[in-house]
Image (cartoon, rainbow, N blue to C red):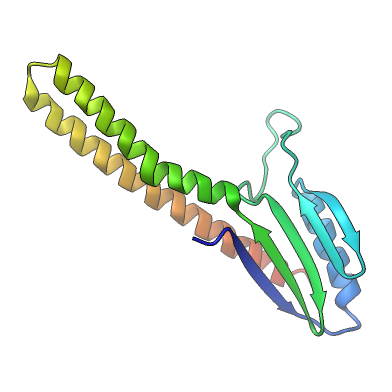
Length: 152
């Protein structure tokens, strides 16, 4: 899986600086901080400190944002390394923990019929968590793309 996704916006040369400034303000409003800024490029990152308690962070799976102005377009490149790591955790680590737990129950339980519902529940819960997580991520990406397209 890619560790980033790209949104490309077609803009006029005259509007490019103004649109980049709007993108900068959009991401600053979402909790990002400008790391570097030069010519038509901006690099933003999300700090580790989450700020005030109870504050809601939009787009939590995005680590860094690179805004790059090109001829006739602006490219917004979003790094999603946290999403990739969490996805691998759900796909590979959670089933291993489930199997270890089932082996522990098998060793200490003499009533083996009770293990079947546990195993089915664990398998079903991993599948549901994966699909819910993936659906939320896809909605986040489309929401961000729509928000960026509607900045005009």
